[in-house]
Length: 400
Image (cartoon, rainbow, N blue to C red; front, side, top):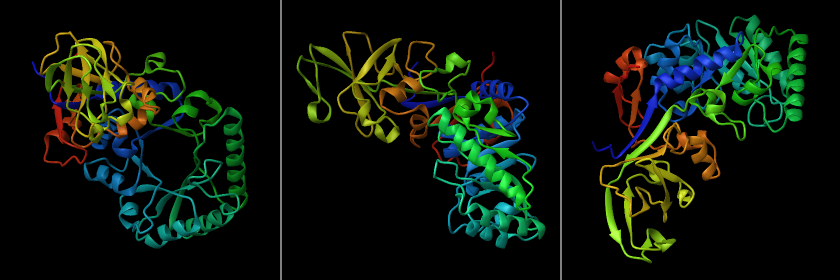
């Protein structure tokens, strides 16, 4: 049977298994499931519905529009939706009315939130910059942010839910210093009259490796998709399962003589008479040009390096004298159980990380969802008339 031209297979059972395992590790600390960037390229709505069905009560989605997408498909207010990157022109009214938790890190932004409040108070998390320098209030601006939050909370305009930060994960010493800064900021806030009910500082890596940083909640992203962030640690080492498998099919084959230049610029030449197989996936689909000669794809259980330049829509592999036919499945990365590269190996081969690889998988690659989860709310959503902005999707239920 011929494989589809290109496909990203998303195993919702694997996601659920990872979620259960990570929650077990973090117990009794709350886990926020991070799903920014369309759930790391896996598809926000199906992943979120699977997580909610598994009992997750905190989801992080970066932006208010992403949170409102989840409210629109029935993710109720019993599930907290945390957002922390806001368009400077955003009107916060819809977010507040939909009970979206807002990460805020400067007084001007908090004032915009306060001004948008109508009936119900806004749920606010105050961000502290402890050294990553992307977000969060600095030591100089923190007191003003806290003072405004105190006044707004007393006036019933906001509910301060938490203080939070993000660690640089540069070294253990750097992270320890960062958490010390955070603790001092929380203490200062309380001295200024602010009650801080909840604290969250650790993401996937720090959450796993530094138990003392778990505070009240850990934000888990990459681990839930089977992509641990620690150097040299595979998913299998931790008992995690890769969620995405990227496959294609051989579109064409041709026999060529020795010393044939292959693809743009002839950066690869054949060393003997050989067969070239065309794989219809290119940099438009998320396979970077630097994958040439570094990434090995699996056809019929054997690995073959990418030969010549990766083009926008396709690349070639030199399969020698092996029997490779049009329609044969090609695995670019998967679980590794059949000898193929994992997403972590793929990422390392192109000097990147698994998260970047999955986030770059383009919109014309259909996402196919498999697992028991697709029989419930996930399947209902996928089979409905909902538009999924990251490409087509298909539903396939599987049974153990």
